[in-house]
Image 1 (cartoon, rainbow, N blue to C red):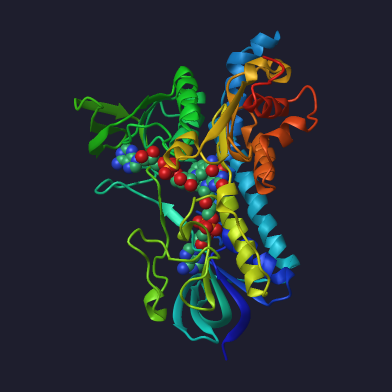
Image 2: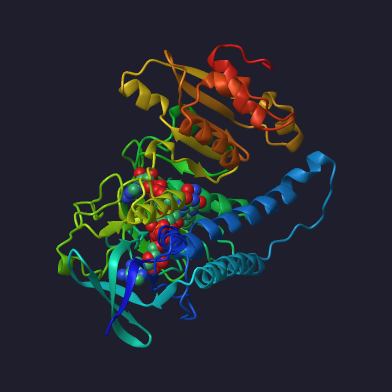
Length: 476
Ligand code: FAD
Ligand code: NAI
């Protein structure tokens, strides 16, 4: 007899493991199938985010920022340090330690919530309105398990360039780019998206000469134009060389280096030699060997599983969440969809406002936003007001030595409802949370303008930007 569960989740990334925990909290019997193995062949929970995504990248961003500040900027504070050194192996060991702590933390949560971790690859075998059969093939052979409800949370994988082999040594994607054993002298990055900018920043701070090649003529096209302009200026000033509007013509990999032939914005042929190349041109949904054909589900032309606003597929007891479905490929979006689906299975009426999902790029300064950009509002014909305030006029930012950037608030010209908030600054990832809360509560810019903010703090800039919507900023 095959084992049966109320809920089976395929994939234990932030979407899957959070869905599993919420379903277990609600009293359901839960199994989660996860196939991820580390380089030593050990099964791991946590998915892309914990193993080769959010967590290791933020650990390396923190280490490299500390190194750069110590080597170049502490003298402004009157501190002198001689011989600042860099031990990449130790930096990587710290990162691996954090990843281990986090993935073991998820194992603890599985035990605490009495969830079953089925180690191996999950593949649909059959489905009816009452139950779904899934084959799990792992180290110990194959077994069939049955679920009353199934949540597909199989995530995404790096998109690669056609005909360019990613060997994770000279040519790497996010996995190799988070694990170089030494600092490359020269590093090429294809794609000036989130990964390109974050990993490009890590290795530049550690001493690599980094050139980023981006196909789009616009830098960070999804961000507000004011923000992307400011971010491009600041990142370029730091020494990150970013070429826009390029076309990659050929990539030739050698034993110890790589050559990229490309056409620049004017159409002129260029050659770039580098010790390493990171390919960061987006991610594709992962439905490899999932057996969707066995249950009459298919993927759309972009490879995603189609779902409605509540992550329901066309089959009544099968849901899909996270990177494998439409919407931004972000861990917190996957998590919130996981909670929503578990509560939906429980008969509750959860709702997720996709307009209130924040974005953060963890460069220095950070870039963060929520809601609409100015160009989107223009396109929609919306009449809006803008308030903007610079960190250079904030005492805390000056004291911290992080006075770059601004907060820009967009509000409806008639109702004053906040429509979007865009930040370039240190700690933007934390500051944006106030804007998300305000937008979830349909706040007006006047609400933030009237709320007392601690002094001195970076958050005062949010209030000043809100005041600036009505041209009454106080400190400028
Ligand atoms: P995943 O995390 O991809 O997990 C899917 C899991 O399913 C995997 O563990 C996989 O092994 C498993 N799986 C797949 N198929 C099967 C199968 N058939 N059987 C069994 N198991 C299966 N997002 C942020 O919000 N903030 C960040 O700072 C951030 N940084 C990032 C940095 C990098 C370098 C990368 C690559 C991504 C980053 N992301 C970040 C994106 C984030 O990692 C993803 O959006 C998030 O992990 C998606 O969660 P998920 O649960 O949908 O999928
Ligand atoms: P991305 O979509 O952010 O950026 C890819 C970039 O590559 C785009 O600017 C695109 O125009 C460019 N590109 C595509 N094809 C190209 C080509 N042939 N030549 C040159 N440039 C090309 O994707 P990225 O950076 O790979 O990250 C994937 C996803 O992972 C992100 O979209 C995001 O959802 C998630 N992520 C989130 C992070 C965060 O929240 N801080 C950090 C890292 C990743």
